[in-house]
Image (cartoon, rainbow, N blue to C red; front, side, top):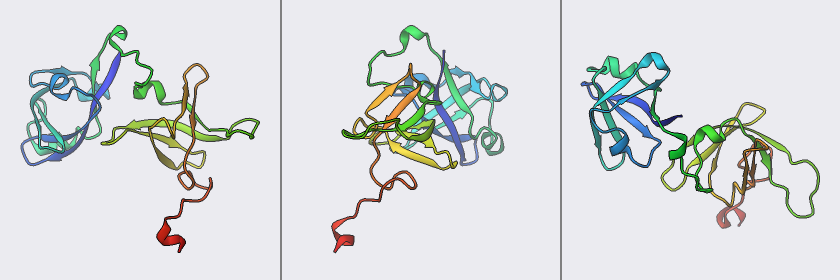
Length: 188
């Protein structure tokens, strides 16, 4: 099974270095210099890492196949993949891969006393990594993208068999759904 370990961002400097959006908990192992990775789209690679560095906030890499800024910029948006045996995938119930979540129908959580069919909020289109927590990206039926912090309080249930994810958003997170919470300053 192919999993995304990083997405190539903008070119950095003149010698082919790019910024990476990391999607793995082991960037130094998965993206070590000398490692050759398949890509999505396939016509962009495979790419061989020639240099990897972390500046304290962001990861940067250079590839043997992109030695200058122009070649590096052409790689923007390419996904770096790693081939993983399904047996290696962590079966921890609290761990989810983007491929497991993308395509699920996002439904509004029903609260006690409310019955019926939960309202459809949209479709999960991505899982974005974050510093404090990841964000589940939902495309609403109107085409808007809403980033939901991927925490149990807001995403209490994922049912892969039913193809649904239950979301309990605060007011104002989804357009037309509840009012945004007021702070004490705005309430006074």
